[in-house]
Length: 254
Length: 368
Image (tube, rainbow over all chains, first blue to last red; front, side, top):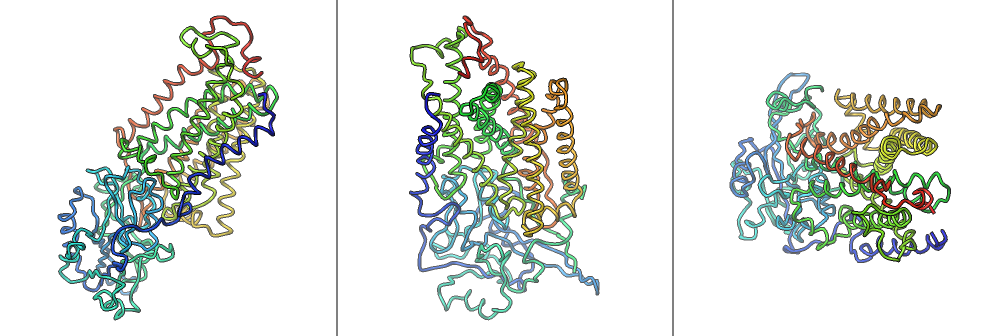
């Protein structure tokens, strides 16, 4: 303690400021900002329209995706959520189908959190994961507001829908689109004014919705024919099987 | 209109109980290190005498914390990607840079602090190299204390921030997350210091009293932090507080969490205040430490694990069953076992119980 407090503070500030500022000054993006997009065709912007009026809940998309992308049993890149909706006045019930997948957001919150740049957005808008680079920290799983990501039980890294980018690049449709019996899923280039997806979206302009728009993630999976009650968190009864089959402690006391 | 979920998948937890262990231990290490650092720069015997127990807490938790962090990765063997692909826009990547800086400051400071003790009092035979040579190394001490202090602040800021920025988990998305993780960490490390003084290092009653008073301060600050989050959340309509209100309203589990937090926090504060009144109470206050540690640990469990059972889109709560293996109970017990193992060796070194040639009292030297 032969250094005076003032001298010490000056030196300490110099040392630690250097450590703290170094990585920031090199950065092109600020903390938690979107890093530059890389790869993919800069002239395209892929998006998907899902016409709920055409979805019958057959889960053909779920099955074909699982065959194409081989996630472990019980884990899904896409799945059709199914709900029973009852009108309280008439007591009439209806089934609602809601196909879910990665929204390929324009402001994807999963990307800037990744500590090793294992996930990024391509210039064509598709958010991809490099499974050789991912450390499996699960931060992107937390950051996705749509529960679209998961830690793959077999690879132990982050996994998600990537619009079957390998098929798109080979001129094929994603497996889920290819197999959809009702033609409910439409994928295409939003930058092309004549694309099928743009035609469908403009024809149904007043009936196009995205999930959780207030989070400003700018999802690029557009739902047609969706009731407002499904835009935000479901206010309703949770899946009963959570308690019965799995003896859920959390659900049981609710 | 009422909605019932018929087919919805369950989202598993992505952060495992290892994350709770890491946040618990690194928070204690950082806050105890701050107290060690204060002892370096604030002259006055009491703060300097707090250094030995604070070092026991900071070093013992500090060396275990990174192990828990590594285990929370699903691909721990790829940890070097943090350093081959530094990502300045990611809070977690920033944390991967701060952690080694903090560890260098903490362990470096301890090595020199201990060297001063050993050189003056004589080191145990098996540690004689620690005191070898003519170089005292003490000129470096304030520098390392500075690195340790800045690193500790960095740890507290980054751990809170990396949780706070996650908008998708509404409960986490509040600046109070940083404050309340830090305050509960102070509460835990001071509880551990009170315990270490009384049961391991046999500290003087006056020194125990200082630690107990700081513990009371940390408890009051923690309470104020919780009230601050609630009141500001109420006034500003923060998403975090709204999410909490919804959970407490809808789920008995969260009502229990809330009631237990208030009861344990209030009980600890009352008991600590009561024990402060008499020397006998101060001497017995170490009884509070296990409960305080459990409270700080449970806060992290609620924040990290229970919040992951709240669906981001679906209704209800996802069930979570603690696995018995390394991703669950075994991992939790293993980390605490490792901590205990370190605590069996470390205090003996710091208190220099194996000194061969005692020439001067440890207190005079270590703080001179």
